[in-house]
Length: 96
Image 1: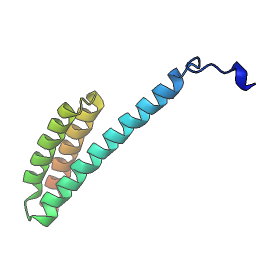
Image 2: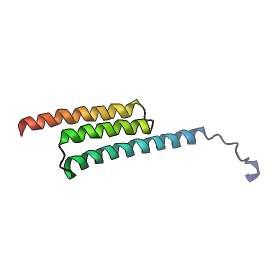
Image 3: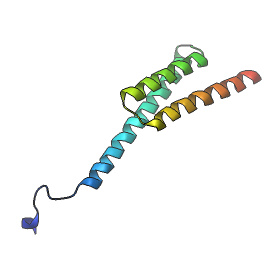
């Protein structure tokens, strides 16, 4: 049984694709977590306004996406979060 095995003959395409997907998701969620922590830190720890913190976090997110060669979904997420934060921020500021 062991004599039938030849090193390097196994097709590992599926394993390579799985590992590549896992690493891509790890980078994506790590970057997403970093942007969220940056926004929370700028907003609450430094006393910076939410609007300035949102703009800085969006710029950092876009630069991070360029540096890590992210796909279009990353940029759509960053822009979507930025727009959602501005809309919710203005709605909250109207009622407070």
